[in-house]
Image (cartoon, rainbow, N blue to C red):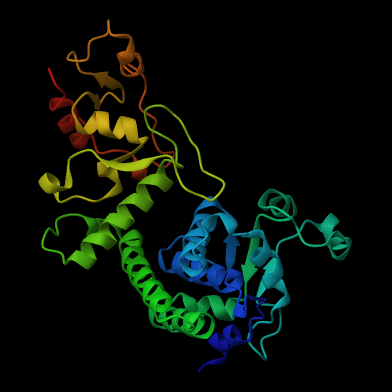
Length: 318
């Protein structure tokens, strides 16, 4: 085993009920997945919602108790582990403000994610390790090493983690090249799941997890999102899972759009079907949407395709 990956075998973990604690291995697996998805593109790792949500997904698989995930612990204590021998430096180096460097040892470990983010919002992965994790073959080797070393007590858990990581690598390849998400209706079931995961991830991130109609944005304490990824032109008709064929919507508004009660138009406004009776008080939540602006992603490349918006408006109930 090459030394750049060998440092992963020396990561120190605590133990719970006689088994290795999953915190650090889950964080490292989350980082590997995010590198392979193209979300982390340098040794500098932002402590953002996407990484934390990925950590929660893996922790839930490993421990079965999503609500007990404590991401601030591995984000903090991973800095005590050393990088590849002969390269110097720690495996994980938080970017601390200069004022904190002098007193950091006196502060103790953070007790919440908010408290950790007041200390740092990014850290640097050891560059030699990062360069290896950019390569899919090495990333797969690193993931297998972590899973085998820390989760081998249960064959069922090994299988679950294997399936999760296989899908993460496959969906990550689509995320790095979204044009692959159009026009491949003959995909295998495994590819379909990977495409669907990539579509959801790209759409929700493009909209910053905010509903394109109601503007609601809510992430639960255990990092579940209120919004869903909704197709403009249904996949069965378009074979298009590119994020420009999608919107982030709350479940009720996703349902309303799929049932042709509301539609976003090329004018970037919401339109409500005349079939919705405005005189019925229970319909107010839909009627008030009429004429409201469509929330758009900040990056122009992710904004919804005008032809897809026109298709959706043409299919509004009349």
